Amino acid sequence: MKYRWIIISFITAVFFIQFVDRVIISLATNAIMNEFGFSPGQFGIILSAFFWGLVPAGVFAGVAADRWGSKKVFAWGATWWSLFTVGTAGAFSFGTFVIARVLFGVGEGPALSNAIRIVTNWFSPKEYSTALGLANSGVYIAPALATPVIVWMIATFGWRSPFYIMGALGLLWVIVWLKWFTDKPESNKYMKEEEKKWLKLEQMNISKNSDLGEKKSFKEMLTVPRGVRGTIYANLWVLFCFGFVFYFLLTWLPGYLMLERGLDLKSMGVVASIPWIGAALGSLVGGRVSDLLYRKTNSRRIARAYLATGWFIILAVCLILVNQMTSILGLVSILTLACFVLSCAHAPITTVIVETVPERAGSIGGLTQLAQTLPGIFAPMITGFLVEITGSFNTTFAFSAGMIISGIVVVLLFLHPPEISPSAKQSITAPEVS
Image 1: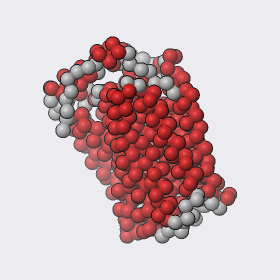
Image 2: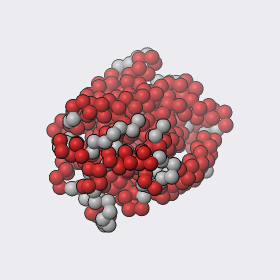
Image 3: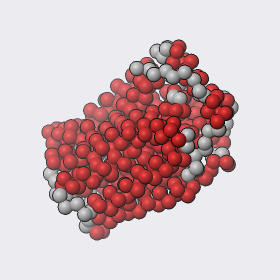
Image 4: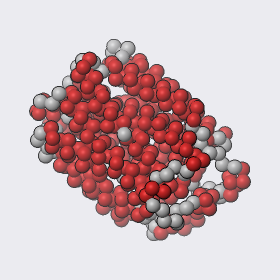
C-alpha cells in the first residue's frame, strides 16, 4: 500500500472515533432523559450544544491548518475532545450537560477543514474525491459498527461507560498521529522516494498557482476569491442542506425509533446501525464514481454537480416516503437507501472546494465545515420542539426533504466548478504509481 493511503486511513480512523463519540449521547437518549427528567425540547438543546462549540472552532481550525499545519492542530483537537468525551459522563444537570457538550464540540472543530488540507497536500487531484470519500466513510462506519456495541455497554454498564472508553481511544490515536504524520509528504521518512516524486509531478499545476508560501492575515485567508464566489457560496448552501439531514438522522434516529416506532433499547441498537452501513458504502461508492466520471467526461460540473443532484433527488424521495412505511423492514430499507445516497453526494460536493481554491483548502475548508455543521445547531432543536409540539416526527422528515430540494435547485443554477484547461491537464500528467 502506498503511504498516502495509510495517511488517509488515519483520517478515517479519527472520523470513526469522533462520530462514535457523537452518537453515544443519542443512543443514551432514553436513559439520560429518564434519569434527569429532560423534555424532548431540553434534550434537543443538549444535542445542539455540541455544535455551539464545533462551528466557530471549525472556522478557526481551518485557518490554523493553513498557517501552522494539520499535525499540531489535529493533535490539539483530538486531545481536547477526548478529555471532554470523558467529561460528559460527569454531567449531573441540564446546565452541566450543555457546558460539557459545548467544550466537546470545540475539540472536534479541526476535523473536516484539516482533512481537506491533508488531502490537498498528500494526494493527486485525480484522487481527491476518492480520498475524501474514504476519509468520510469513517463518519458512517462509526454509527454502523459501534451502535450495537454502545447499546450493549449502556444496557450492561450504564450510559456513562462508553464515554470513558472512547475518551481513552481518542488519546491513543493522538500518540500514533504524532509519530507517523507530517504536514508535508516530502519530509515524511516513511514515504518512499518514488511515491514522493510521483506526487510532486501530479501536484505541479497546484504548486504553480498556489500562494501557500505567502503570509496572509486571517481576513485574507477567509476571503473567497471574486471569480469563484458564486460556486463557493452555492456549494456552502448545498453542504448546509446535507448537514441538516445528516445531523437530524445522527442525533434523533435512535430517539425516533424508540419514541415513535416503539422499539426497545436492544432492537433499536440493531435497527439504527443498518442505515449507517448503507451510508458507509455510499461514501466509498460516491467518491469513486465521481472520480471515474470525471476521468471519463473531463467535466467537473458533470462529475461533481450533476452527479450530486441525482443522489439528492433520490434522497428527497426517500425522506418523503419514510412516513409511509408501516413495517420495520420497509422503514429500515428506505432509511438505508436514504443514508446511502446522502453519503454518495457528500464526497463530490466536498471536492468542489479542493478543486476550486486548492491554495486555501484549509481556510476555505473551515467555511465548508461551518456550512455543514451549522445546521447541527438547528436540526436537533427544531426536531425536539416539533416533536414536543406535534407529538410526532412526521413533520421533521418533510422539512428535511424540503431542505434537500432547495439544495438541488441551487446546484443546478449556481454550482459551476472550474474546469481544467487542456494545457493544464497536460502539465500534471505523470507516470501512475499504484
